[in-house]
Image 1 (tube, rainbow, N blue to C red):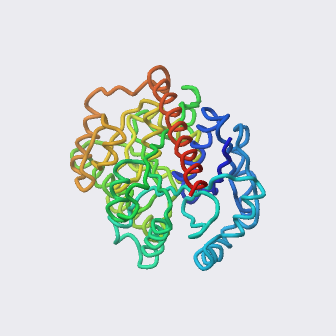
Image 2 (image 1 turned 180 degrees about the horizontal axis):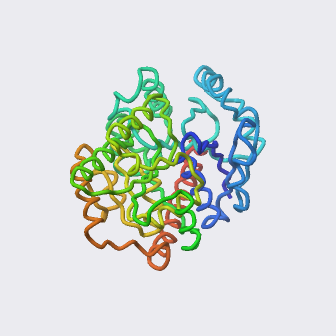
Image 3 (image 1 turned 30 degrees about the vertical axis):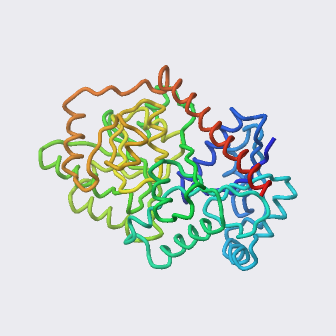
Length: 391
């Protein structure tokens, strides 16, 4: 039995990262219960109610300690770099008999004595440098460099990301593994409940769903321009957008989006819901004509995985990683809103299957993939514990 430590990722800041950890520990609990025990370490600055999502998952323990408060992150990082080890975290890990640490958006030190597996979601800063300020760019870049130089084994979520990792940090060649994230078999509301949730938001029967955070690289502007093109053709569509309405790299980005919508008179076509409960996200996925992800960059999209297990049609920007993740989607150039407009119009004029709503084939595939997710990750951490303890 291996005990692995995860640091908590706040879903209000990064839903994709939070969902990744939740899905991973759920998969380990379901398919590797005799091989892995998961512990999530979280600061006392996170409300207890935010952690209830982990209740009831077997072999998952939550440890709250002020050491992991966000206000202490910078000091702990400084000590980890200066002294080679984040000893504050180490002492708590040792108290809980941790065998290996899953390092995500953290650095525990050059000479951290426990085995460490580092997860890097993507290398967006290398492709979209203009979206990062000088400080944000170099904070991210230096973090990746020290992880690479410290001899960490790097876990990526796609072959596309692995290629980037080994291209930009050649020292990692031979020290990378791909474990593709996937969503669990869906626990969906009934059709009646999903319809009621759609009514609560005042949505029409026919709408498209875009559940991405309002970050600049998520490319909402392409969707807005596509809707504007359709309006000029006399075609009306409704795009429902959920997600955090703030981008720390560009605090005025959401205001720019709102101004663009208002200037073009698209208020009825673009419905901006903000952060909504996960159950509501699944309900809107069930009832939408198609899910849209127009992003200019992804490591591996959580929302695409969730849509796949439901069986809803998916409209994606033409990224390498999107094609690796979902080869039967409707693809468009993220810089060509006219292509997206044509696809949206085709949903108005043609009949597309709305999927199986999580049953039958899609649920079976999800179960198989979720098991594979657990197996690949478990094999990897067992391997790393053996290698790093033996070195």
